[in-house]
Structure formats: structure tokens, C-alpha cells
Length: 407
Image 1 (cartoon, rainbow, N blue to C red):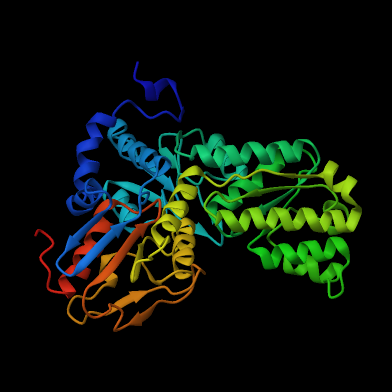
Image 2 (cartoon, rainbow, N blue to C red):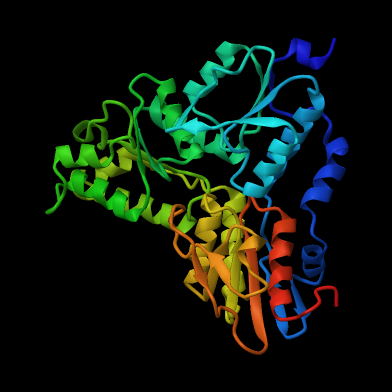
């Protein structure tokens, strides 16, 4: 009897990796990127020296999610296959997924409509995971589920489960509208009275701490509730729910900021309630994914001693880890976050890029962005960016300088 007739939940793929590998290799491989990697992550093209970060592009979790998506289409050729949202945050990859015959269920104001899904269909859970509520609705439909949730995300969920089980409020450093943060926050509902609050950055963490300590200028209860509306659990009570907290984070946030937020909140809890209370009622674990950390560390290594003259960061504008890589690069050198190679105009030499950390920040066009004469170009990419998109961006830079990339 076929596997699909007896099983409705899959997390380990279908053993079809060898069959889909040639297609994935063809669609996402880059010869020029492999050339630079094989030469110690640095190469010379005419007057341009290219330095590639030692960790860049697809991580294991993204590789796995893409493999499973392609395998799913092959495993169920006669079934409708749906994807909840985006498989990863890369427009090129998501476009290719759709071209493979996979239908996307898009959210409307953060809510997914599964009314078109039937028990005869297959639904792919993206690498970010889905909320407990969405998973429950899908299981009730009775469709086949292919779960590509990243293992690093599952580790964060485990921490949040522990917080909720033991009566701690989960303070999540993340973007409240991000699929992963919403899925992570929902995990507290496994336990009665589970609570969470999502803080975007240190500034919002300071607001939480100020309320704890009743510091001068701290928001009133009404102001606090209004500020974090939609970013905390139903019925969240800042007077009751901030006395016992555990910090977690969206896996793709900037590691240094997550650690700083945890340290600051613990210090403010000790200030508000005493060191003994903080020792007993504060928990924190670094739940940044290893691939995110590796890519951030690789950028820092690239910037040591002599940063590149120009840095190009390739990846989707709604990709959290890519945004943070670009933000990190800007601290050291002229840096340009582009969605893909189409942002580099070879005719004019201009570059269209997003200059701010905010994923919703508008693009700007910069005209004279490449320095005259010989220069060093640094390149990295977020964990959801395929190598071919990195290579295409590099080729366009070389074309602006009239350099044949094959030489």
C-alpha cells in the first residue's frame, strides 16, 4: 500500500533526494561562486578583488525545506499541493515553488484561509513553522501534512514550552508580524495560563524594563497595553506577568542584540525586585540558530583589519537574517542590501537597494556607488538566498566595469 494511503504526517521527506537533486542543482548552482569558494573565498577579476564571506547563502534548514517541497510534488503527482505562506523568504525560490505546481495559501491580516483545502490535498508547512491554531485546523481537515519546520525553530519552541509549563512569561525578541515569531508565541497556549510578549528591539525591551521598575517616564498601564497590543498573549497583565520571565528569540535576529536584551531585562528585574528574585525568576537561553550565527561571524571575520571597500548583501527584503547581515555590514563599510541581481543596472551602473534594517523600508537608488580604480568587493547572502542569485549579482558588478567574469 502506498505511503500516502496510510500516513498523513511527514517530517523526514520521502527518500527522493537523489531524484530532485539534479533539478535543484540546475536551478540554484553558480559556477562563479564555486570558483571563488574553491580559491579560499577570494579571487581577482581584473581590477576587482572579490572576497566572499566563508558562510553565506542556503543553510541546512533551507536546503531541507526546499528538498522536501520538490520531493512532495514528486511523491504526490496527482494531488493538489498547497504551501502555507512562503517556504522561505526569497522571492526567486518561492516563484520556482509555484512554477512546480504548488499553490500558495497567503495570509490575510495574518490569518490563513484553509477553506479551499480538502482531505484529499497535501499541505506543506514552511521552514518557519505555523501556529498551534493553524496546525490544529489543518489536522482537523485531515489532509496530508509535510512539515519542513526548521530544527532550530523547534529548539526555541522547546524553550518556550518550558517557560509556559513552569509559569514564566516568554519574552520573545523578534518581529511580531514574522511567521516564526507568531508560531513561537503560540506555543505558550499548550499550557493553561501561558503568556508571552514580543519585543522588536532594545528600545521595546527598555519599555518593558521601565514598567517593571516603575522608572521615571515609564508608561502607564494603559499606555503599556496599547503599545504591545497584538504583540502579547490575550489578557496579558503587565502588573502580574512580568515578575517571572524567560527570554527567547526569533532564530534569525542579531545575536548580539538578543544577548544584550536578555542581560538588560535581567538587570532591570533585579533592580525592581532584588537580585535574589531575579536569580529565581529569570531565565534566558541563546536560541539564535547556528547558521544565523555563522553568517554573522563570517561577516565580522570579513571586516577584520581591512574591510572591503564595498559590501553587497543579497537576499529577500523580508528575510530577517539577511536584514541583520546588511545592518552588521553597514557598521564597517559602504553596504548595499539588494533583493537580487535585477537591482543592479548594468546600463547605467546604478544600484537599487534597501538602506535600512526595517524590512518595509523603501528602496533607494544610488548612482555612483562603485569606487574608481581597483577596489575590493565583499559579498554575502542570507540563509534563504540561492548561490545562483549571488553569482548573478557579482557578474553584473563586473559587467559595469567591463570585466569578463570567465577570465
